[in-house]
Each structure stands twice: as C-alpha cells, then as structure tokens.
Image (tube, rainbow, N blue to C red):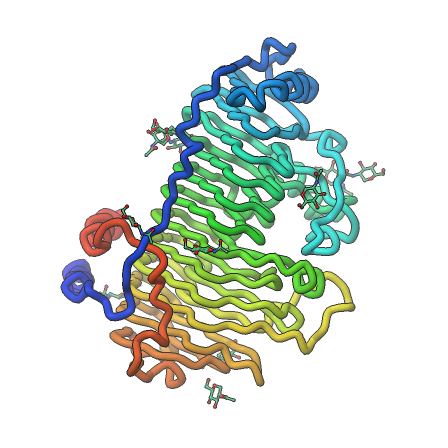
Length: 467
Ligand SMILES: *[C@@H]1O[C@H](CO)[C@@H](O)[C@H](O)[C@H]1NC(C)=O
Ligand SMILES: *[C@@H]1O[C@H](CO)[C@@H](O)[C@H](O)[C@H]1NC(C)=O
Ligand SMILES: *[C@@H]1O[C@H](CO)[C@@H](O)[C@H](O)[C@H]1NC(C)=O
Ligand SMILES: *[C@@H]1O[C@H](CO)[C@@H](O)[C@H](O)[C@H]1NC(C)=O
Ligand SMILES: *[C@@H]1O[C@H](CO)[C@@H](O)[C@H](O)[C@H]1NC(C)=O
Ligand SMILES: *[C@@H]1O[C@H](CO)[C@@H](O)[C@H](O)[C@H]1NC(C)=O
Ligand SMILES: *[C@@H]1O[C@H](CO)[C@@H](O)[C@H](O)[C@H]1NC(C)=O
Ligand SMILES: *[C@@H]1O[C@H](CO)[C@@H](O)[C@H](O)[C@H]1NC(C)=O
Ligand SMILES: *[C@@H]1O[C@H](CO)[C@@H](O)[C@H](O)[C@H]1NC(C)=O
Ligand SMILES: *[C@@H]1O[C@H](CO)[C@@H](O)[C@H](O)[C@H]1NC(C)=O
Ligand SMILES: *[C@@H]1O[C@H](CO)[C@@H](O)[C@H](O)[C@H]1NC(C)=O
C-alpha cells in the first residue's frame, strides 16, 4: 500500500517530466584522457618496493615516479602497483602519469605522522582547516599537473585513518589532518575504478583544479569517523562525479571554495560541477553539501540521481556571515531518501571562522537553488531552511517533492524566499508561491540529463524501498 502510493506519485512525476524548469544542453564527463594509452610502464617492485604491509615504500614510489618523469613528453607512463600490501608515506604524482592498481593491490598509509610531511596552508583557507599553520600532505598528492589518472581494477587506497581520528579526539594533533588524495592547480584529472577507505580527513580533494572526473569509486570510512568527507571539489571547475558509492562519517560530496577573508580575497569559485548516480549514507553529514567554506563562490552545480539512506541530512547548504561569496544556480533532481533526519537544510549561521579577522558584514548571497523530484520515506523533518536576517536567501524553488515525514512541523523556514509546486507535506509560507515565470527557478540549461530521468527514477526506487 505504502509502496503503491509512492509509486503513484512517482508515475505522476514521470508523466509530467517535460518539467517547466528543466531544459537541455551538454556536459561532457569524458575527458579524452581516460582512454589514454601510456607507452611506458614500470612496476613499483622494480624500484625496490615490498608488498608485505610492513616495509615502508615511500622511497620506492618516489623513485619510480622520478624515473617516469623522463617519459612525460613521450606520451606519459604508467606506474603499476601489483597485488600486495604497499605501506607508504606521502608521495607526489607527475603530469602524464597513470597510477594503476591491480585488483588485489592495497596502498596503505603509514601510521607515523612524520611520513606525511607538513606543507603550507591553502591560500584560500589562510591556515589549516583544523589548526593554525600548515597541514599534513595527502598520501597521494599532486600540484600543477596535467593529465593524471589514478585507477585500478578496484584496488584499494587505505589511509589507516583511525590513528589520526584518535589524535583528533585526544587533541594531540600538531597540524591539520591530511587528505587521502589531493590534487592542487591541476587539470585533466581522472580518478576511477578504485576503493578508498579510512581517510584521515576528507578523502578526495581536488582544489584549484579543472576538468576532473571521479567515476566508479567506492569510498568507505566508519560512520562515526570525524570529517571523513567523500569528495570535496574546492575552488574547482568542470568537475564530474558519477557512479560512486560513499559511506563515511561526514558529507558524501561537499562543494567548497575557501574560507572567509582568505577565500574572498583568493576569489577562486567552484563552477560547472556535475554530480550523478551517487548512493550512500552518512550518519553525521549530508549527501550533497555546499560549504561551509564557499567564500570564493559556488555556482552551476547540477546533481541528479542521488540515493541516500540512514543519514543525518539529505541536501545541505552551510554558510555564515563572514563567508561572503555566493551559492547560486544549483539544480538538484531525482533524489531518493530513506531514514534521513532532515531532508533539506539551509543553514545561514553555521559559524566556524579561521580567526577573528573575518568581516561579519561579508554576507553570502544564496540565490536560485532548485530542488525537484524528491521522494523520501521515514524522514523526520522535510526542511529546516534558515537564511540570514537582513540577507534573505532567494529563489529557493521546490518542485515535485513527496516526503513521508514523522515530525508534526515538517517545514521550518526563516529569511528565505521562493516557490514551490507539488510539495508534500505542504511547504512553509515563504515558499508557497508558484512561480509565474519559471526562469526565476534555476533551469540548469547548460547541463544535460543524458536520458529521461523518469524510468531511472522509478526502477531503482523499487529496489531501494524494498531493502
Ligand atoms: C508513512 O509512514 C507511516 C508511518 O511510518 C506509514 O504508516 C505510512 O504508510 C507511510 N506513508 C507512505 C505514503 O509511505
Ligand atoms: C551537444 O552535443 C551534440 C551531440 O553530441 C552536439 O552536436 C552539439 O553541438 C553540442 N552542443 C553544445 C552546446 O556543445
Ligand atoms: C574503469 O573500468 C571500466 C570497466 O572495466 C573501463 O571501461 C574503464 O576504462 C576504466 N577506467 C579507467 C580510467 O581505467
Ligand atoms: C603552481 O601553480 C600556481 C598557480 O598557477 C602557482 O602560484 C605556483 O607557484 C605553482 N607551483 C609550482 C610548484 O610550480
Ligand atoms: C567499475 O570498476 C570496477 C572495478 O573497480 C569494474 O569492474 C567495473 O566494470 C567498473 N564499472 C564501470 C561502469 O566502469
Ligand atoms: C570494490 O570493492 C569494494 C570494497 O571491497 C566493494 O564494496 C565494491 O563492491 C567493489 N566494487 C566493485 C565494482 O567490484
Ligand atoms: C592519543 O591517541 C594516540 C593514538 O591512539 C595515542 O598514541 C596517545 O597515547 C593518545 N594520547 C593521549 C594523551 O591520550
Ligand atoms: C606532535 O609533536 C610532538 C612534539 O614534536 C610529537 O612528539 C608528536 O608525535 C606530534 N604528534 C603528531 C600527531 O604528529
Ligand atoms: C562552464 O561551462 C560552460 C559551457 O560548457 C562554459 O561556457 C563556461 O565557460 C564554463 N565555466 C567555467 C567557469 O569553466
Ligand atoms: C524552527 O527552527 C528554529 C531554529 O532551529 C527553532 O528554534 C524553532 O523552535 C523551530 N520551530 C519549530 C516550530 O519547530
Ligand atoms: C525575507 O523573507 C521573509 C520570509 O522568509 C519575508 O517575510 C521578508 O519580508 C523578507 N525580507 C525582505 C527584506 O525581503
């Protein structure tokens, strides 16, 4: 009965799928580099690596990559990591490199913090995210690169984060925890066909990058592990994230762009981000998040086919006075949620500042956020939408949303303005209008859903709800 009701609604959604707010154009998620053939290949064992899980192989990785530099202008090279357990500290990638893991290869991060050297803070953050000063370098790192591929036949990259989580909990960290993979100032990056587990901090962090494709990866960390975000595009543009399963302690995907006065002056926005076919759970974070660091601006983000279960938040915007910047032209559709505490949350008073030098009058501009085609079962709150007094968040558009909500007060809205159409339970007053001119709501017309969403929405939903 319950299933039938939801299906009826979904069929209704399908029948009106020439949505007034949808349009079509192109977005290429296939950088040609994902098919790149590398004429040269070496195996990390040729450089003395031992896959016994005990020998520290940092030098072997570094030497192999140093050797491969000479092939950069000859079509590039592949570094192959065979089956085995390869303990290592941080190492740097180079341009025109494919790091390829065998099926049973596991790259394991050292539990000695000195194997993760300390590097400068990001200019858009002004300091480490957790502690003033520098930050530990990611296990796999790259800066100023082009044409880099990290892939494998579902090989694993294991950060052994639990020791870092202990240091975080017992306050014995000296510097901000490292990411598992970070690429800075890089372009044409592909990360695919791998499993990432137990990152010390955020798992995959492309920052100041463009043309990034993350596809078909699994990201796992305990649901209570601190700040183990899945994928965080940060001041990055032209990013595609698709076909991922992510189950971690914090946001599955968080689009960011720098922190307060540092992010404002660095002024590197995140733009043209496409996210689709993501499944996962997060006990403390959100499925799709924006911010809270968004001071360089975030725009043109399109997310589709998001399946979330057993999570704290579904979709969440986090910002604060002092952030400045903007989040605009966001389009999210075809979201299915089951056992989610707050389906949609907008938080204008998130707090967390790098220092006392932020400008409290630097107010973020939040505008043209469209969320449509959402079905949810066992949701506590439909929406907790809080803008900023004197800085209303505007053109928040909700369409075709049906949530089975347990709270008697499903929507709670303040300092937000916008529209809604076919929303159940009925949305809050400030969003009750139906848009006269649908172009007020962000249509995402530079990005294209590659197939009609209706069929794809229904068939996974049947599986999902039957779980
Ligand atoms: C919503 O949940 C309630 C209680 O959990 C259940 O009785 C009802 O059938 C559900 N409705 C739908 C449409 O799923
Ligand atoms: C969209 O893709 C089609 C075919 O793939 C191509 O013909 C067309 O030029 C593209 N449009 C834009 C704006 O890139
Ligand atoms: C990922 O695996 C699929 C299926 O084996 C393959 O088609 C694709 O090329 C792989 N991606 C990369 C970058 O190796
Ligand atoms: C990397 O690129 C950035 C931005 O272009 C530049 O500021 C920095 O100096 C470069 N770093 C290196 C090591 O070349
Ligand atoms: C995803 O990656 C796995 C290996 O990790 C591969 O077997 C599978 O074919 C890939 N799927 C796609 C759609 O690329
Ligand atoms: C890859 O490995 C992970 C972890 O073992 C597993 O959950 C996932 O299903 C695997 N993916 C594929 C495509 O085999
Ligand atoms: C903090 O955790 C680390 C890692 O588990 C442990 O080695 C250390 O003794 C702990 N320190 C304190 C003060 O509890
Ligand atoms: C912090 O610094 C102290 C003193 O140098 C050192 O003993 C300790 O191992 C460091 N802690 C971490 C987590 O690196
Ligand atoms: C976003 O994509 C559009 C269309 O492909 C392009 O015109 C625009 O320059 C891109 N913006 C950025 C910031 O890359
Ligand atoms: C609405 O949210 C605010 C802020 O979280 C809270 O103080 C207030 O009690 C909520 N109102 C209702 C009716 O739940
Ligand atoms: C801000 O939005 C609220 C509804 O959330 C509305 O009542 C108020 O008039 C708006 N303020 C301004 C200055 O537009």
